Length: 304
Image 1 (cartoon, rainbow, N blue to C red):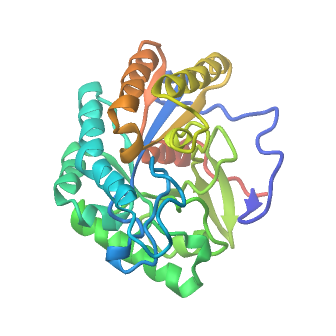
Image 2 (cartoon, one colour; image 1 turned 90 degrees about the horizontal axis):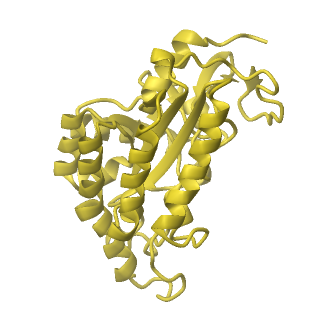
C-alpha cells in the first residue's frame, strides 16, 4: 500500500483484483452527476469574476471584473432545467446516480435537494463552493470541509459518504477528510479502473477513482463536438471494458454535469447509452458508496 502523495506507476499490474461484484456482475457502472450550479464564483456573490468553466460561453468575451450574464445563466439553466431532465431519466431507468454535490448549490435549490433525498440518490461531497482546494491553506480547507458536510446534512438530510475535490485535492485533503467520520472514500484520483487503498499516516484510505475521460466536460471544452460523439465515446469505452470483464470484472465511471448533459442536444446521448449498456447481461449500475462498501468488505487493506 503506497503512502498518500507517493506516485505509483505499477498499480495492480498483471494481477488485477477479482472485484467479485454483487450478483456476479461483470461490469460496475458508476454515473456521477456533478451538481455545481449555484456554488460557482460569481460577481453578485462577491467574487472578482464570473465562472465560465464548462459552459458554452466564450472565454475572454467579457472583461475581467464584469458580470458574464451568459455564463451565469448557463449555470442557472443547469439547476433550473438540466437537473430535472436528468433526474427524470434516472427515475425512468431505475439507475441511482452518485450526486457530486457542492453544498452551496443545494442550499440555493431546496426543491432539488429534497428530490435527491426522496429518490435516495447516493451523495458525495464536491466541496461547499465550486472552489479549488489545492489553493487553500490547511485551516481554510478544514473549515470548508466541515461547512460542506453540515450544509448537506441540513439540505439533503444525510451526510455525504465520499469526497471529490474540484479538479485536484491539496496535499492536506486526505488527512483532513480523516477527521470526519462520515467519509468511506474519496475520488481524488484518475489512476485506475478499480478502487485501491492508500496510507494516510498510519490509516488506510480507500480511493474510488473518478474519470476525466468518460466525462461530459469533453463537450464544452471542444474535445468532442456533439452528443453523438459523446455517445460513441462512451460506447467505445463500454465495449472495451465489457469485453475485458469476461476475464476480470471491471468498473466504468461516467461523469455528467447538469449544465452540459442536461442540455437537449446532449441529453439523448445518455438516454441511448443507458439503453445500450442495460441491454447487456452482468452490468451493475452502482453508486460510488456501494462500490466503496463492497470493496471495504471484500478487499480490505493489506499492509506492506
